[in-house]
Amino acid sequence: MSLQALCFVDMPFEKKQDPSTGVEIDFDQVYNDAIKPAILAAGLDAIRGDEERTGGIIHAPMFARLLLSEYVVADLTLANPNVFYELGIRHAARPFTTVPIFANIHPLPFDVAMVRAIGYTLENGKLTAEAASALKAAITARLLAVMEGPAVKDSPLFQLIPDFPGIDLPHEVTEAFQDRVKHEDEFRLKLAEARGGPTDAQRAAALLQVQESLGNLKAAQPGVLVDLMLSYRDVSAWDLMVRLCDAFPDYLKDYVVVRQQWALALNRRKLPGDRDRAISILDKLLKERGPDPETLGILGRVHKDRYKELKAAKNLMATAALDDAIGAYKKGFESDPRDYYPGVNAISLMIEKGDLKQAEQMLPLVNFAVARRGGAASSDYWDLATVLELAAIGSDWKSANAVLPRTLAAAKFAWHVQTTIANLEMLQQAREGSGTQVPQLVEIIGYLKQRAVELGEAKL
Image (cartoon, rainbow, N blue to C red; front, side):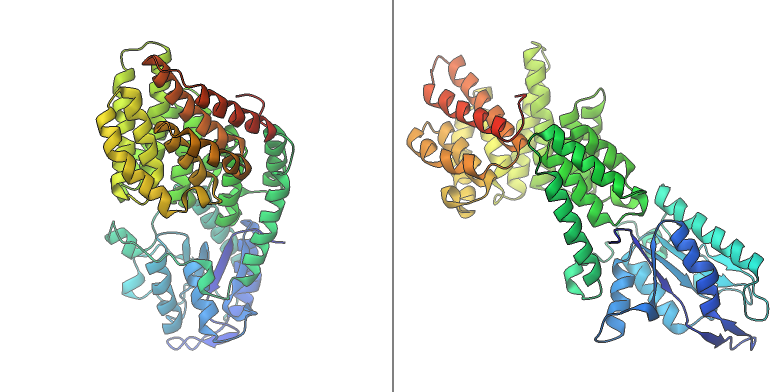
């Protein structure tokens, strides 16, 4: 099973005559003696257009490779219209990870002369052993430079238009990646087995073994790395998750989901500087892409954790951190009122602050949002936990006790339950601080703690 990233080779096949010089070039020899060995030496999988094994329209898998392959090598030697057309498609889809090459038999056309291309020398239409070795080394070096990065834009479109959106297609739109989908499914089964251990510590150790089996992470498929990242999150392996994100290739570090989860893991790890780094990642993401409930929800959690720590230390800045958290959660809910997560957290913190009027105003909106997702009839843990929290906020203990068993049954990861416990404990403290005893809430929290222990996390 190969889980390596793919490098698609866009070039002529067999022997082709250069129309301007009359030289017959053996492109198969260039591919077999230099290009393919260079790609393999970089730890990537190589495939040329004529090596496709899929049926159907011949252009469909080729276009899919151009759009979805992590890397592309394009041979521009003949100024072949097909190759240049395909290079244009690639440059519209990806800002970097495209490596142009060309034989030094004539200059590149003006329109692509600006592209950083690797030249190679032919004798009688073939690579000498020395020239093949030089081309192989140059391609491998360029691919490794891209992988180890920083990412440098090689697409003129992305260079000239800073906000150019590119093309982001899911794998499901083409049959060309069926083998990859199968391999990724097999990898997900390995991850599921690793997450099946009795404790989070053992699960994390098993996941680390899976990671080590991948070899060079820079050469692994991005979907595989994201699945591994989320598996670390599920077992609360925050340090391993952060280190994995730190090791990602530069282009993958730019994925929105990676940046969001990276910030979440930094906040949970809590080493010196982690929280500031998490805030920086999220602020930059918001500046680039505008408000969204997921990013603002994570930012709200960072400020919420800051508030709790500052409050415990009786630090005067706790109030400012509380306001920052409420502001982030509220803005996240307003950016998409269908997403209840930032809304319920905003309400909890408004109650903590004593701003009951504002909490009461938001409560029906959040109740409606979670009801649209199925409410107490849902099978999703977060839906059920939110119903439980809202019932506790409204002191509706009948509804809270009715949804509690379903919430406990839906819980699969200790960190999910710990998040709910922390929210309810903060509500408990706010109620008791105002002189109200809440034995029903204490009992519910006790059940949740017991479930967290059952899920393999003894430290609460």
